[in-house]
Amino acid sequence: MLALQLLDVLEAGTDEAGRGCLAGPVTAAAVILPKDFSNSLLNDSKQLSERKREILRPIIELEATTFGVAHIFPKEIDSINILNASILGMHKAIEQLSITPEHIIVDGNKFKPFRSIPHQTIIKGDGKFLNIAAASVLAKTYRDAYMEKIHEEFPMYNWKKNKGYPTVEHREAIKKYGTTKYHRMSFRLLPEQYTLDF
Image (cartoon, rainbow, N blue to C red; front, side, top):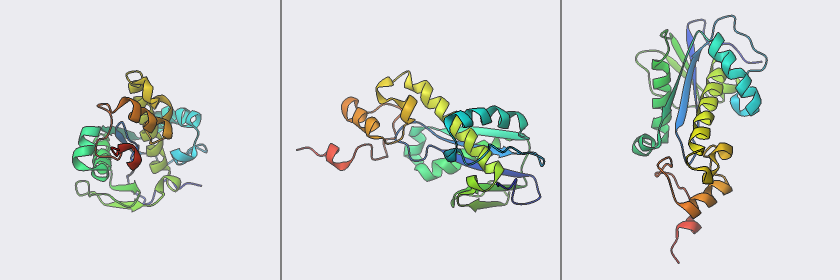
């Protein structure tokens, strides 16, 4: 059973999706849920099927007190690194909230202070707290929708299916077709044996 929040204050949960991908943005979301929020389906987005995430997204958007979602794109990821890009995305998502939270809980173990609002990092927080779980669902569904959109532009990478993650299929397509403006050039896009000149 997931807890609604950590402290009895106006608390935002935040999480990101797409950190380990070779292409596309890292996407972050922040959510404040009402005190009486309850949903038996809601869990860490990684534990949910795509269908369940798609069912939950409009419920969260409708019932959340406020929410925000932000994409950080590959050029910026390459410039500031993926950890900083993930944290920047969370900050940008929190900035979009129509109500300023009194406390922030963050999935994972790394965060930088946002303004002067107290925060706490929680490893596997998306499986422990509803507001982080809700943020994880929004981050994942918004990012998936973006990857499906850019799939139309570059269908040979099959981002509709792999969402930019380093699958064998995705890496074989990079080997065959090269990179696109959506690839993260600071990442190791191909294993060593593919990049050596014999």
